[in-house]
Image (cartoon, rainbow, N blue to C red):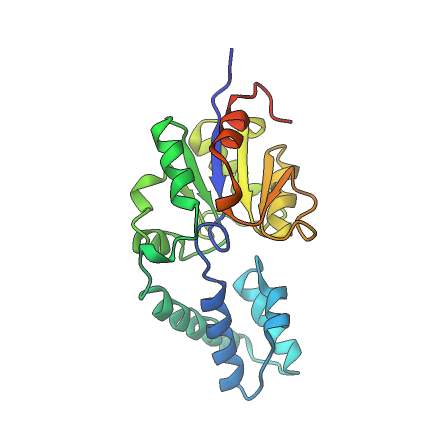
Length: 223
């Protein structure tokens, strides 16, 4: 019997590029504290939790904060980030994504979001995508960060599919590692060198042909 397949998408850098908003919000925080950091350094914050991101930034600035002030700065950063998010609309969806989502909907393939972002639902709502997802697993649902596979395993369970019948789209190394640990098919979106651990890598969704998705979904056992 052919097993049902499910698809899981990361959010930032896959469906939408909110990295630029994170950078602007973190940079404002650093500037307000009296120092700066580069876009190159910002690359180290991708896929990293808010707590660990602030710890890294403070280290770059040679600063230490009390526990109370640390929490206050995290809250401020999120407020700034959300002010950018609130201006978003469907035009922010990355090229080629809508085509893939439409194909999955037409063919009754369930799909979920698996993201560390605690703002995932807000962002999807702004993009008019919230109602299209069969399940959403975000930073409020998980206790372990990628590369731990928790977020993807919960998503597969919510979709009612086995991990080995799940296909994950990710743009971060930690996310690819999480998918691989869960025995899911991993598809990297981004740089082929950076995402070399993925089963397949595309620079963006516009490179993905309908035929590739059809073959992927028709295989009895993906790995």
